Image (cartoon, rainbow, N blue to C red; front, side, top):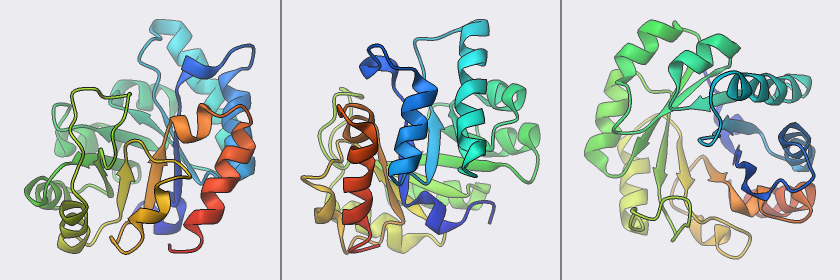
Amino acid sequence: MRVDREKLCLYAVTDRHWLGEDTLEHQVEQAILGGATFVQFREKQLQGEELLEQGRRVLEACRRYQVPMIVNDDVSLAISLDADGVHVGQGDMQVQEARRMLGPEKIIGVSAHNVEEALEAQRDGADYLGAGAVFATGTKRDTSALARETLKEICQSVEIPVVAIGGIDVCNVASLAGTGIGGVAVIHGIFGKEDVRQGAAELKGLLKTFL
């Protein structure tokens, strides 16, 4: 396996929406200092050189603390940055093609919404799954919530770690105990907080009680 299960515990997904006067690399550093163990660079509003430069800065912050950083969807960007891997959705590049481009040592995560998709991703060589949305979320408005029982079935059906994603915060994260997840992926619950470091620390403290 190219990613340790423990590294997926608190998986921070970037979003410039809440930056204000701050920088994304500083927010990522604060998230890591608060307890984030994994970072996904997901900046859909940036393009070209600006996207590449921002990716470099975030990757530098992650490397400073030995925290893996992967790229959302964009395999070419992951290669250009020499990021630790990529996360692909069901409508994105196939795992086998991403593996061919990235090589054997990089991390590949895949979104899964049911057991069939989970098993297929595992067969194709995914290192972990992202399952959700487990709660209502403003990030993907066209996605319905994944039933708790389905999440449990996904976790039980595969040997690779499963990360729950979607609308997770300090108020609901404990309700995921007993599902079998290896971690949670969080956007607003970390980067939408006035104090990013504290937001990550509070989530990490709750996760320690059941992961």
